[in-house]
Length: 326
Image (cartoon, rainbow, N blue to C red; front, side, top):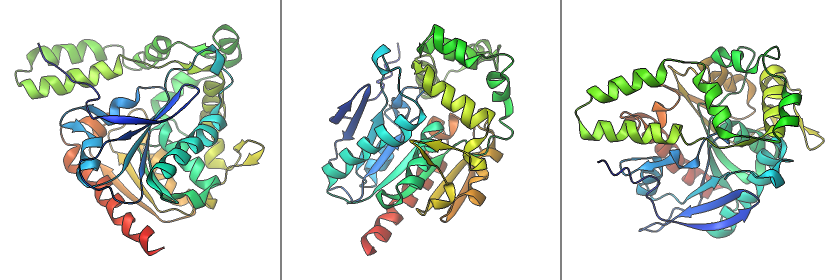
């Protein structure tokens, strides 16, 4: 029996706001001054950043002396059904940054966002450039003129968002997970067959932890789903400059913070071209690094420490010095 020890790194709660918690990981050595705020997607559990010992981006960042804070979006209840894209990307993420800055004493934070968490980070940094020292955008959807395989899931002929919202103000996690499974109907059987043939205990533990995380879906408010599917996917409003949140436009050209854009070349969830587009849409400097990996493997795969973790850690440590210089 393999003990997966999911989310093993000790942490303390800085803030609880609605379904969201903000967690600060404990450090055994003095922390560098500018915190790193990890922002997951809202459709998966946040412990993907700290999956298990040896399979944890959090471990790598802490090992470099960084002050690591996690946004755990939590599980929305019926009382949270009003939460939409702006509430997450501007309101709740703003509260999380407040908590991280108060705990560290810094005036700016680095933000590392995964998938839609990266989109939230970019939106926030564009609207509040003075609070964000840098952004690490990890497999982040930006230009969705061609959403790839996701086009089937967001097709208005197949999904009536208004009817869905009337039926489910908070859409159950298993329903969302089943929709993603439909993109690869034989995927689970194929992975199970490969796992049965795997003899190496460490590789088995890696795969089992990843599959446990995938099979632990999070509900999403129908309003957030309407905003994300309607505005970002169907209208491509962020890339086209048509997105408005909280009564004001979101202009990526207003973003001034340096960005490390980490792209997975084998990503079938966020097409690489969607992420690469950030280089021409963002107002500040963008460094794009493409990693030979898939959407999940880039973060928790066997090669993640050599490639994504190292790139992100080196970048964030280097930015510490830039912030100190002012």
